[in-house]
Length: 104
Image (cartoon, rainbow, N blue to C red; front, side):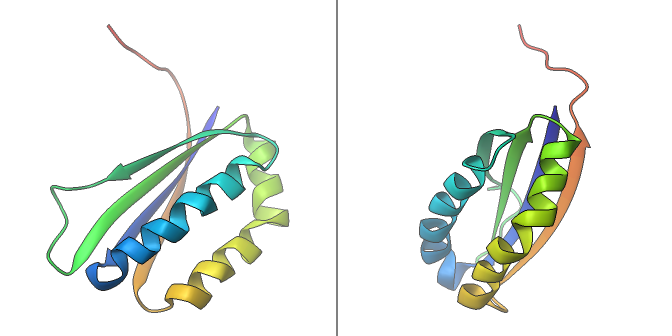
């Protein structure tokens, strides 16, 4: 399983509007073949009055599903965010391979 992690720094002035856009955006990605689920996480300990920090962790079946997303969907979906919120947020991404899950 692959975890595609998107880390966001969103200006406080647009935060509510951004979240209202982000939730349906997450559902758009989940409709793509190979996406399993997503976790929406708020980093409350590292945010400031000006910037809110968010992570979206998408779980995908494998690297082929990630490649399909990047090659066929990513540019269009990212463009939508830039058109709506250009200059009001920053993003970074990582692709991680899930080695194991542990719980009590």
